[in-house]
Image (cartoon, rainbow over all chains, first blue to last red; front, side):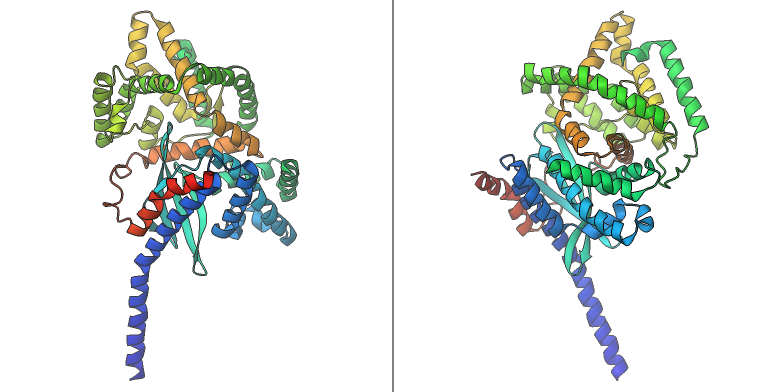
Length: 198
Length: 274
């Protein structure tokens, strides 16, 4: 008897999961659409650079998978770094990304985008969107989302087929390689860059 | 660009390209482990620096002047005209890759823009839902399974690799516009065309490149990564095979709540600006 109840229980849980799957995709799309609205407020042409950085910092901390990203962009050097270096890198990297991308995304001027669909990719959900730029044509932006404790977090953004986290990893790896594989050389450059930005 | 019509220059480059692809086929894994496949990095960085100097002193000022002197509709007309002139090369590569849907698009675009668009000065095809897509022999060679080879920075022309270099030369030879110009001994026309497209292209990237350069720790490495990834995306033909941009809400299962939030975005923006 108990065995049969277990089977039924498992079936109920399974149906629940199956029903939840498409809802997850919907949630992911709604999340990106919502993010689009936030981005317009963050990146609009009337927003001052200081405000833009502050708002983008908030958005980055809330909506991005910061520890996962940090580990990825340090590449194979994550494992060779000491725990102290890892902690300092996570702190510096966050602020560097905020400063760099608040500036780089400024050119988009907060143009509205349309969510066009989503697809699963491993344990992540990819939400596709299109940004129509006034004179530069349209560009496809893909958002990679992962579920972290019930909340979707962004793990990567592809702009026109170019992965932001791969680009960042390639740059950081190059800096470390050209300094004889020393992670602390990258940390020093990041510190210097952030000090100059202040 | 016009230099590619000189046979000596071309064969020299080809020899260089073949030599490079031959000697550096298996990208040596650098000491750091990340394989950048850039065995000529020191030379490439030196050429990159020279290109930067040329850019700062010649190309960028020209692009800025171009932007100041010409009003946006005129720049757009030049841009559309250049794009239309390049259509035969795009069409040929669409066909060589077996992308017949894209080839039909390119053909339709030429017919519409050359007639209605007054010789290509207006891009009506995009408004009719047939957007432009780039294509070139480098992409064709890639779809035929030819490896990109090591990263190269060319003087003036910038990021490349042996495969894309051979492609650029091949496209140059195949271009009907350039052939007509050379048959009538109007090389200056090809030169002017290359010059204007270069300045037009640069004028469209002034801010984005400046932002990337300013915020990069290693600008060279960033550009190398961007170039490689962008080319890979073009080879996959992802963007061209997107669903039709016009009807979005109905066909793609967008939820009503979401279309609402997207639709209200411009208004929200207006509110936030006040």
